Image 1 (cartoon, helix red, strand yellow):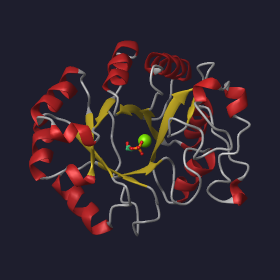
Image 2: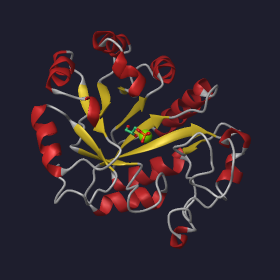
Image 3: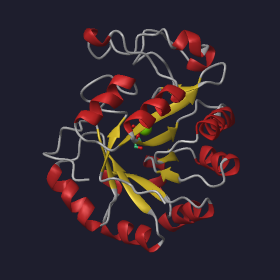
Image 4: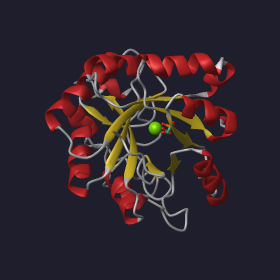
Length: 249
Ligand code: G3P
Ligand code: MG
């Protein structure tokens, strides 16, 4: 049974320090965040590590597709200076390091499966192998916009917690068919952009026993967050964990 918190630190604390790094995760803890979310994909040698984009360009000192780099090369990259020169020492951590970190701090982790195109299976196999070896004592679940990745994760880790994330293309579709897709994969949660959620959708999700997470391009104002929680939303992703006066969980 996964107990989602009211707030999840998005890519750690991405507004305050460079996203998807150990310092970002550490920063979120300072504000009493109990769970963090990270984006995970594999390197050329199939080591799962943290990176949001398909390319290394925006958040590191390298360019191109990370699948062309060994993890020992990725580990040497500066993943902090783009944000602020003082963070030059930050690098893209391996998921293994992140799990150890969460283990020490007893943090829950939402691992978003973010494979580069064509690497869906490698990503899921590498992550599931790592989790099976690691046997986390803390809570975790996998989420993805990529349904194939969720399907693969259901096959490789049959008992795992899965959350289906919806992107803009999903909102044009029949919502009942999306719910069916969640049920077919035994997803326990569904993730929405704040712009696309309303009371009816929340009701339908709840009727189908789906926990609800909400993300947004900018931090959701505290007043809106209170309404979302009140209406049945379980978790809100925050870029700045200091944005609310206090984290309620
Ligand atoms: O799961 C919430 C959020 O992480 C989804 O969007 O693009 O930040 O990975 P993105
Ligand atoms: Mg993400």
